[in-house]
Image 1 (tube, rainbow, N blue to C red):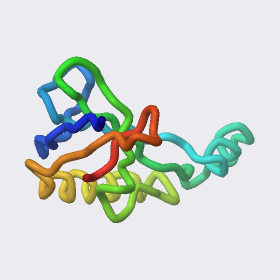
Image 2 (cartoon, one colour):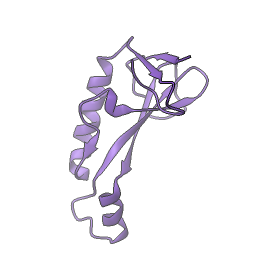
Image 3 (cartoon, helix red, strand yellow):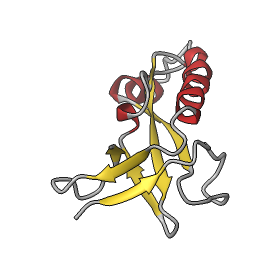
Length: 112
């Protein structure tokens, strides 16, 4: 059986504010970004991807954000805010759509 969550279209600023279907996004440095930080040579920032979780009414669930939006990657800190704004815009257009957890997935939800 699949678990299904209806997307609210809202991206919340913290996990403390949640309603069923709300999405929380957060940046995560990729391998190159982590190397830049570790080597202290990140003059223009560092690269990474946005990850997401969706609230199912009881707890936060991992969400395959790349199945919802066109881009989750940023090459530098200067690009990060633009990517975040584009994600917010695209998620807002998905209000009332559904995400599901496929049988072969133990954690991640994706667009139905």
